[in-house]
Amino acid sequence: MEGSRTPLLPSDLPESTSSNNTGSANFHAHGIRGWSGIQGLKKRGHGSRSWIQIDPLGNTSILELDKATIMRHCSLPARDLRLLDPLFIYPSTILGREKAIVVSLEQIRCIITADEVILMNSLDGCVVQYKSELCKRLQSNKDQSDDLPFEFRALELALELTCSSLDAQVKELAMEIYPVLDELALSINTLNLERVRRLKGHLLAVTQRVHKVRDEIEHLMDDDGDMAEMYLTEKKQRSEGYPLSDLGFQTDTSSMERVGSKSAPVSPVGSISGAHKLQRAFSSIVSSSRPSLMSSSNSGENIEQLEMLLEAYFVVIDHTLSEVLSLKEYIDDTEDLINFKLGNVQNHLIQFELLLTAATFVATIFAAVTAVFGMNFPDSIFDNPSTFSWVLIICGVACGFLYFSFLLYFRYKRIFPL
Image 1 (cartoon, one colour):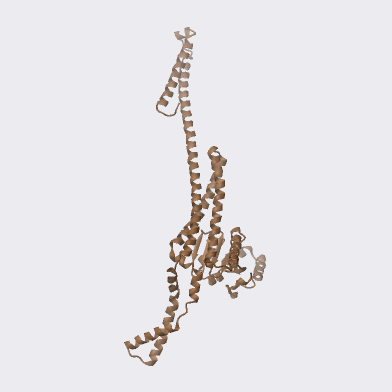
Image 2: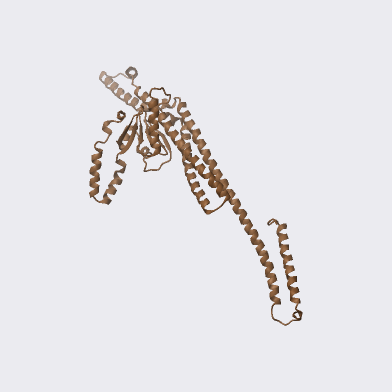
């Protein structure tokens, strides 16, 4: 298990890390707190971190590496390593480089090369599961022939775990959302509304993560150049088996000399020095154009293997996205139902207010008439004691007729059913 350190040079590994860390800790313990904080911020980007190295045989080893060492070993720019930094929050990304594939899918952040997988050492469940599952698959397929190269097997496992994790989160969220929405549809109260608001925010975050993974896979499938760039094993074999033929070089040089001799007569010394210059120039041109020739040949290769791999997980993540969108539609439908119910309640309140206003108007008329006849002024009508009773009866009947007239008018205008 410890023999997988060979892809990294021993000179690249920092020595006496523990002693240096102890000395710096003692220095900062007795120094100024503010100065130590500033120094920590300055040295944060240059400090070593713990990485897990997995070779094609499934052997693992723990390495203490800094960013500069990883950048030199994998030929990666600093901006790609920021995707692997747990201090930064980046969306899911898969980048194909000259010698490595940078994978940042949810919690799985690693660098895949043709010979190894460099994984951020973490206690996260996804990282531990990826490490154990990858080692298990590599060791089980050690004696079996597999069509997929090493880098695609590592990438496939990262996509598999990411898609399964997102799908599990969506299913768990669905099991929690549906009962809450059904309860909210039956009983609209503050507690249920707060629970739905919290679940809707969680659903929005999951939707963005699923959508980003889907868009990243779709972007890779649409770009043949990016897919061809990810054939690391093939590119390594091509680079190792791309020797410059001396015979061909000599024929090219001799042909150049013949062309030069036909154009103008030169001295022997000048022809020899010119041949050396042409040889150096031609070798520099070939060495500089070798990566471009390799990349152009790779782009023309058959990329169906990687495309089928990406398409399989694109179908999985697209199904997960459809489930998320169905959840969102169910929430929107529940919100519309709640708005309809609240609008219906509001309409009933307006109807009741209208009836109450009509009754108040009629009662006000009755009170005004009785108030007028209740004043103390001399009149012949008060000579008969039963006269005031008839006034009250006639006024009450008139007010009742007026109220029912209001109700008939409301029914005729279809303001509310009666």
